[in-house]
Length: 328
Image 1 (cartoon, one colour):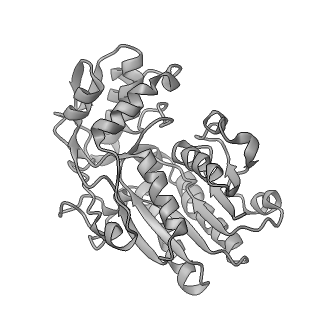
Image 2 (tube, rainbow, N blue to C red; image 1 turned 90 degrees about the horizontal axis):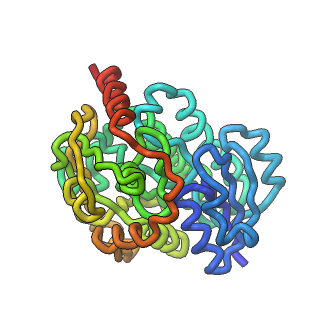
């Protein structure tokens, strides 16, 4: 039985991945500090995995908790996300996304691991000048979150070169689906809209709603991670997206409900749009979910968010003020 370490395995993407890996008969060890992850997300698989609560930025405790465990693979998903909180607390993001990645790599280099799959971010491109955006586009992270995720990716690349740890880095574009986070002020737009729909409130659309995003369904993300693990391909960086881009106005239409418009937040790109030709050619992967199909799945599972806190116009406007504060 192949042994795999999943960091951040109680989170949105991680928990979906763990369910798949358990189904495919991997022996799964999950580490998560539960700062944003939730044990509830692992309800399907908890009895079949080894769960360890630990912060990856604390190397001493990480070593103690793993207790000389050996792994064939690692999927490194653990990270702090969101832009404005990273501006407020850059040290926290550096410790989690850079020091934490360094610590994981430092443990793995002592083992003969077959591959590490790193969850990178399309935010490394900043404000792309080319659409769709391919992997050769300029790297231009705008905020500490994007910078620290890119630094983690560079560590993975460097460890692959120096310590011969085979890797694949996946630059994810706008992931959505069941179990996505709905708390906080700065998270993904779909989480905002779902909480508002549950509360029977209008959707708060930032700007004119014509900005577009490459929304990627979580099951497609899980598929590509599993493909990366099983493939003989190594030491590559890939964009992972739907290969299409949709307006926020169209998203609200699919979810269904009234909307109101609030001031645009400066610093956000008008478009995200992944060029996925490289991953189609080399890894032989392509997305299966259209946005229409994915949103249908989300709505069918909307009961999962019944206790979600309300994302209200007041909190979103407060977030907008923070954007202006840091970008003025």
